[in-house]
Amino acid sequence: MFMPRADRLLRLLTAFRRLPQPVTAARLAEETGVSARTLYRDIDSLRLGGALIDGAAGVGYTLTEDPALPPQMFSRLEVEALVLGLAQVRAMGDPAMAEAAEAALAKITATLPERVQRHAVHAVSRSYSFGARAKVPSHTALIRQACWDEEELTLTFTDVRGEVTRRTIRPLAIVYFDSALVCLAWCCLRDGFRRFDLARIRDVARTGSSFRPRRVPLLRDYIAFIRERVPDLT
Image 1 (cartoon, one colour):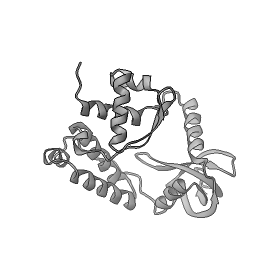
Image 2: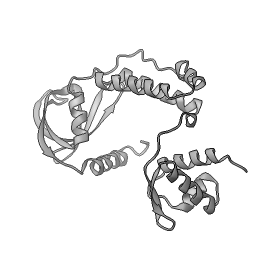
Image 3: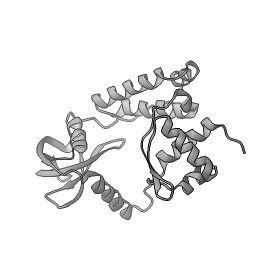
Image 4: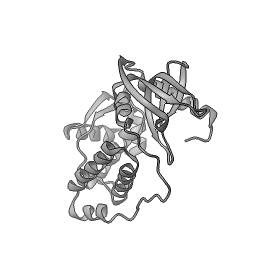
């Protein structure tokens, strides 16, 4: 079945973003429904368009940077997903995250053609919460920055028994639940993975001690650790 070139290139970019890399030409051709010869031409076209794609035939390809998405690459459903997701962030995030979500939506909407802008403004899907959401502690932004910087933190924490303890942790991620915000971390005191309810943290301070570049592998191991205990987790 004939597929317009623009649609093929969009499908190829989507495959690059979704599949584990490096990805073989055979897998990309299968995902995009084209011949190997056409795939190589399409990769060359993406490179000419500004995409940085490392690798070669027989080795596998890695998309290290893709060009800015032109407006027509957002479908109506994709715009709806963006609007819905950013609305959730505005409702659940700390002030800095909520402001970032609002700014991101404004930037995305400004790049859309007028017809698609109307889809964003009048999105069908909406997000409301009638229950009490978790209060976002003031130290959330500091913990988030430490995750990015891969810097250890010291904190005073009240556990579920009401006991106060001092910990040094390696913060890995912040998880937003309906009724709580939780920091996934490696606890240096317990020498293992732990979850810390942000509302139970009394104070937190940066240490200046880096654990770079271990955040990503530690987080991957933590998720695997959780899935072993909760098999149905996806």
